[in-house]
Image 1 (spheres, rainbow, N blue to C red):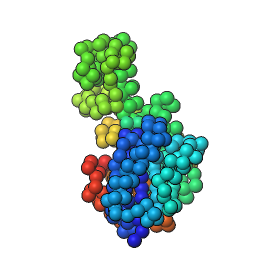
Image 2 (cartoon, rainbow, N blue to C red):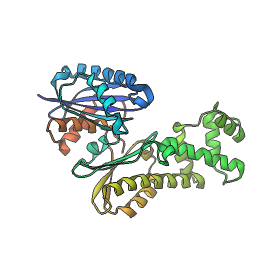
Image 3 (spheres, helix red, strand yellow):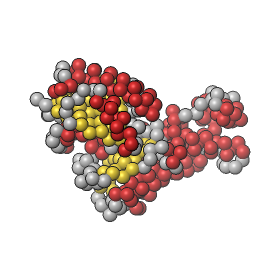
Image 4 (cartoon, rainbow, N blue to C red):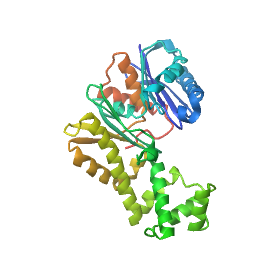
Length: 331
């Protein structure tokens, strides 16, 4: 029996999953943040070693029994980082073929049957990556959020929402129920107190406040509704840039949606999809139905020459229920 490992290295947690050649998961390890931009390369190695120890122990195998390894790594953004990544991964003592990619890529393998297309992520942050049919070309955004004019994650949504709240106070914009929601979230005494505390750094309104924007929008607040429309259109702009890089506008291809922000539903997704399909009419919306580590496992299988089928993908997802302590399906 051959075994394959997939790893999802994230900014808040790291997942390591081991599957056999039938597609059944036999080991799963979870550890802390592994993004080198958050914890450094030593922290990345520590998270990987912890996750591997648990997964290998559950699978009752040794690492030299692994036939292929796939890694999706948050923080792997530029080719110049490859030597440092290889230095970390070499300390796992793997003897099998392996491949590592930015963590925006595995959702494609987990959700698109053909394993190519566009992956659009709207979680705490935002990202967009794409592969062409032959996987010879990759399209991408920077992944650096509002610093690079990429808006679409919870952090960017709340960042913009706080600007709109400030516009109410300065009478630059309309009154909005977001003000009251954020006052309560931060424990402020008033709108002025909220803005003082936020700008001085002793009150926090962060990505965890994103669900409040959806709640206020659903209650009919025009400012919140416009904000979600804007966010959806900004997500579409990221996807369109990747589509443009890969010459997909006239193709039929999957756009895989992943991340907690898409759980907010149609107020965000409808304007996004309308803008995106105006540019690429044959695009197909696919919701990621499993954690991205499933895509990393498939990437690991491919390194050993094993092509995952739709049945394999479903088996991997279903067997994850035995190990995973959070809701698996995101769609």
